[in-house]
Length: 388
Ligand code: F3S
Image 1 (tube, rainbow, N blue to C red):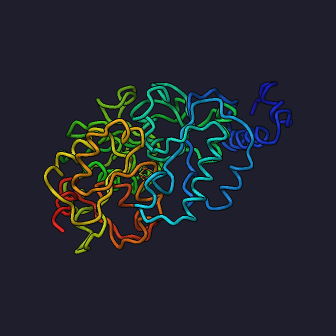
Image 2: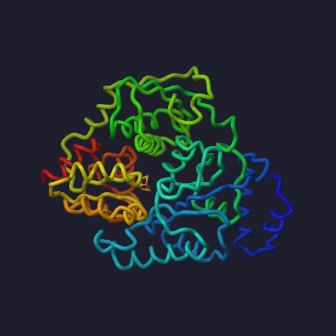
Image 3: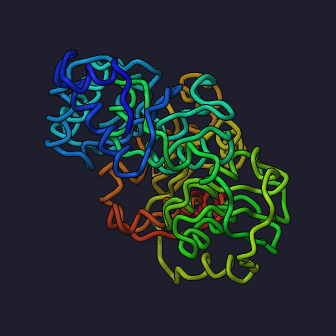
């Protein structure tokens, strides 16, 4: 891969070992994937934040770096609510390590908002056609598919390297030819609410990392697309999808020859496949809840008290920006947590079974938290939370 004279200087260590390591990582990726050069990026979203997932080795790696990011950079969810961690049942020791990780990123100039929905917090991170380097799989999917920005599936280290250098190798989804859909998915039933997560759960497992184009029988909201993409990235490795007449690039392309049809009974099967499990945690906000999703929960919870532990995960910016809305939700006894989620926090591991309205959380809860999972509609989740 070609490096400019300035990039060569970084490679030769002229700005110190942190920038040298960063450009080495980017150049190695570029060489492996056949990139011609590095291209400027508008922002990064950096995974590898929860102490649960990166442990002491990750903390040490980040703490040793000396430099400053040169593009707006935001963190993925951490292992706890950075303020209300005691309420989550997080230990002092974990909290201490988690705060150290956050401080290490802060020292590098990374914004310490910890969210997988950065697009709901900052307007200027990614627009149509912008190149970015994001690393949380649902955020990647949303950036590529719903915003029409361009990102590969970055790991934490490659996103952080891109943040320090302000560039990423030009391959994969940065190039037009890799954004073309190769499989068309016709969805017969009209979808609502958690059905989009159920659809993503089914399709991701079927198509792996292919780029699909959907023909839907219903008009999805941005939150529906968020759920669909998150689930497809979890059960498969889909980083870009199109929805005919809905997403910004969909109508540029011919419908591909390879076709799949999804029927109503396949969606219903996902809800039914859970037998008679009894949830002891009801969890919303995977990906992090948006304002409309919080408003819906406030409406459903109005005048009711939860009888089961109920968590709603969102970003701190949204929680701080909507105090009256949060108060309405918390009046029911449901807990609104920020900076974290039910999957990346160890706090959910003490439960036996969580009920979720998210296809992604439904996929990950058993594997990453050791907790059984039930997928249900938002209404059904609230009904279960308040009925004890
Ligand atoms: Fe976000 Fe956690 Fe789900 S990072 S997408 S809420 S698993």
